[in-house]
Amino acid sequence: MIFNLEVIFWLSIFIIFYSYIGYGVLLYLLVNIKRRFFDNHSEEHQENYEPQVTLFVPAFNEKEFVSRKVANSRSLDYPAEKVQQIWVTDGSDDGTPDLLRMYQDVEVYHIPERKGKIAAMNRGMQFVKTPIVIFSDANTELSKQSIREIVKLFSKEKVGCVSGEKRIYNKSADAAAGAGEGLYWKYESQLKKWDAELCSVVGAAGELFGIRTHLWQEVEPDTLLDDFIISLRIAMSGYTIQYSSEAYAMESASADIHEEIKRKIRISAGGIQSIVRLRSLLNVFKYRTLSFQYISHRVLRWILTPLLLLLVIPINIFLALDEGLFHFEIYNMLLLGQILFYTLSLIGWLLERKELRLKALFVPYYFFIMNLSVYLGFIRYMKRDQSVNWERARRGDLNSSAEI
Figure 1: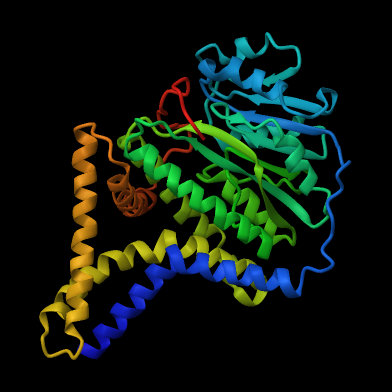
Figure 2 (figure 1 turned 180 degrees about the vertical axis):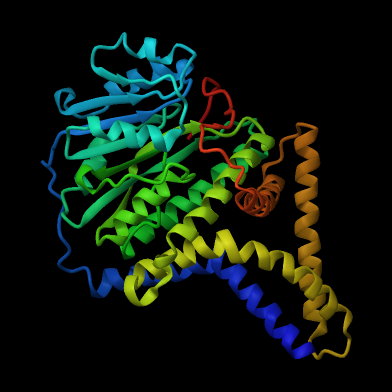
């Protein structure tokens, strides 16, 4: 009995460590091996590759962002005559469509009925006339080189999708949402760079990603993570998802931790839905490296690791109390480590409530709510009560002085 518990405990610890840190270490080693032994004749990008593109923005009640977004789109370093700008505004009733129609270089496709983001994307794709379409959110600002950097990667025929980078404005007064989200996305961005170099990114960032238009497939109307499903289905068809850190979308962090939890719960519910719909991608014999990356980077984090984090607590307590174990002091130390971690999470929560800013304590708190959101997202998925309609979390003030 004790032996079996020890095996379960250490296997759980290994999986938890692997999903958050170990995979990054292994990925770094594999990428360096590939650089040294297999990349001597890699295909070069065509620097003068400059096809026509569509900048596609699905939106719901984004009037406050319209002028800034259009100005930002016009300022991008790419020939204006080669950029088709499309906004699809299903259900917007705040004046967004009327404001957009004031811009002659913007095509607006509006219907009064609100059906959700993916329905808008499915409907709007019929108006795309270019070989490449780039999706972007209305509340983000794109880096000046975004289109050019994304297009450059499409000069390789095997590339079917390109993901840009999501960046969070970090303000000195950021709360737990901003501090945790910013650090999380910096780490994720590095993993995506290595994923792309090894084989393929495991899912694009919805804030900014492009695809070859002919690879578009209509997505189920109740899909929650459209960017994830769209990009991985392209990868499953034999293309790769590449990544550009020079093409980035900037947005402020969630206004507070409650808004961030709301966003994370939706993502978690969508992640579970995506794993069910992409279950064939678990077949490592068919998809090989892509399956390895998908399981390591996504499936473990969204399904197994949160469960194991809960499981190791009672097992650790049981093993720490059993003095008959030869190395029982190790279990005491690990238990103390867990208690310390969750204590820091609790302190982070208390500081958030009192609006005190100590970013070092917000990191364990953010990690805690990430995994808590998986449980809440699973409940929401099982109850089938997650709406596909836009439920954008309130964001912090983008006008505040900030650094990326």
